[in-house]
Image 1 (cartoon, chains in turn red, cyan):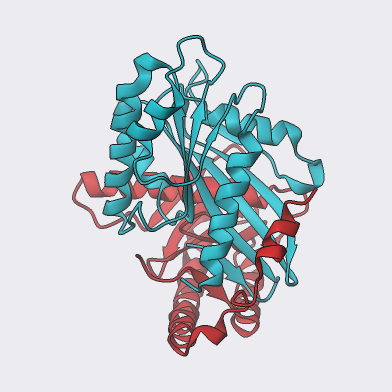
Image 2 (tube, each protein chain N blue to C red):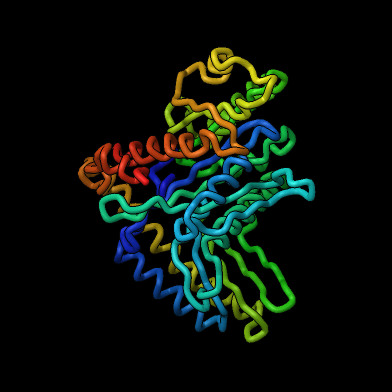
Length: 164
Length: 195
């Protein structure tokens, strides 16, 4: 089986949130979000009130997966930057540390050049955090079964979810 | 691969509906979407062709409630069933936590069913998964069709390993939630083992 799924801890989540928040400002962007390659939203910042971030996350991952498929067919490892230009809003998508996807939504208050510049810096910081996160999760997983909060789940707990 | 977030206290799991073209994968998702409380579901997304055949995937996020203080979220995906969409199908299996195989009960679709199960097994292997080890259930759909094959025969051909299986008529919703619950349960049990 492939390695364990992603685990996010309080400490790293805060660090990630701070980087994303800073990126929203530094890049003059509307929204910044981070998605697992499997389509799970990790964090989002900026004008997210009217955005369906869950759907965005799933479609972004689908987009990256399809682009990755194209890359393979062409003999590339991956296309690490994608840019979608719209009439008002633009999407800048990058793969961070081979594992997560960083998405920036911006309009004409910013520019592609600025976004690229700021994303580059943020990506390096994020990659370092995810490296630490993976090591931490691996260490906890190998430290015995007690680490999983779900080891205690009973069949009743599971049945209760479906009781309605 | 589930995603456990201690910060927001959420568990996210990915479930994929697999099966041959026109077996009723999207219909399963549509029924779940129609019958779920609006607070428990997100928007359903269908990337389909003009003739409503699934082109890339359908996606439906569902919340099932809390378990030990953690919100459980299930992300349901379907794959395109037609044989020539194999590259897309493979991509969607990435990071899957549980699989539902939807079989078309009609006698003339038996070969397509068998081919699709084999394709599922192979595509999972390429991602490093083993169909015999991951949470997996089978649904025999279209039981109301006059040309539906006998259940015994379906079981023998499609479910030789005897995983949990269900009869269904997805258009009326019969068996749809039973199938989903069964796989969700297996996924949570797997989570308990800590993989």
